[in-house]
Length: 190
Image (tube, rainbow, N blue to C red; front, top):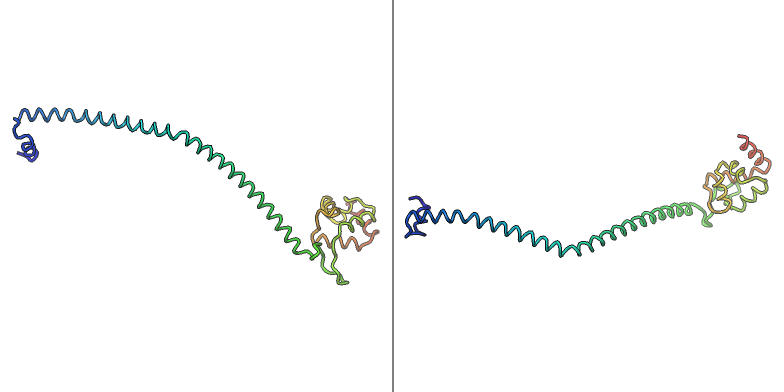
């Protein structure tokens, strides 16, 4: 007798061999059906629980999706604002550097002249010089070798020339009307 038969003899001691074999065969046939039915039931139960959970969570998920969408659009707007403010900050820093290099009065200057005084730019002075020469803004721009737009902004006081251009303006002021008119004609012919 093997070990399994010994165990079975202890469990079913009074059953004859034929009955025992028949009982084992019946149990063996019924177990797979029971397991199969349990798997089907468990799968159906699991599917129903998942369906109910989705049904319960659907309204909450929709509100969360709407919130996420609005948050994303707000983040994009904030990024645009940050970019805009960053560019404004850089522009302000550039202006601050320009002011720091200028005189305490805020006017750009050129190196000191022989008399010891620094040349200070004045938009009204530029307009007076142009009127004294009877020149147009375009002609004055060509005399100073700058764009007409830059010259116009200088004359209106909307912008200040750089140190290199201040030197040209000072030179034009010192050259006198005849020399200035001659250079204007030369620039127009060129």
